[in-house]
Length: 245
Image 1 (cartoon, rainbow, N blue to C red):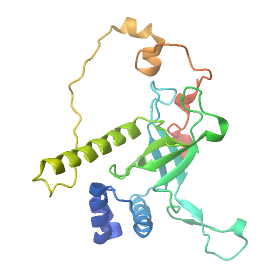
Image 2: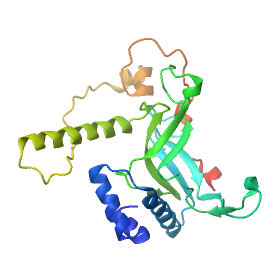
Image 3: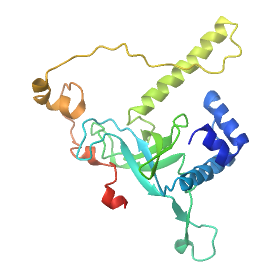
């Protein structure tokens, strides 16, 4: 669902404003959000797609029983027809992208690794579409790349810290260029991740003898959390083909 698809299904004006918002960081207006939701629905229909999923990356490693680390909150492209006559609780259903579900979603954050420090009334977590990552269709499901945060905005994923770091580089970079002078036409600072890292190589035998490396992909020091999340690797995982069918 790139710029070309947005322009095709949502119109050139909406696509232009969306592109500009990615540069300035401005919020997408409610009117444009409605157009984008309808455009994504039509994009999905044109590819025979009837499901969508907020796709996020909780701070967990290993493969679990499903062979993946990402989280997927699956939904269908249907919603109640709230404008139809009848009893409010018995509205007929219609096919569409449910209002607001492209940009935000609410789910459970308590079943992911969190150190056991979150209380029950803060157990909700929220997904938010990263507008810089276009949705895409894979195996009949439209994946919407999202950040994943707690009730008070704490990052529970690997994507949110990266996005916040990019915002900081952009903000302070523009501030620096303004103070230097001569860069008044610059609207955005884009950072690139480099490959200059240090790698520690261990043998397969040593790796298999280390539960922390196998489960988390890193060395762990200290006591385990006071409440474990032993089954989190399978939580919000990929939908089995038999169920999806």
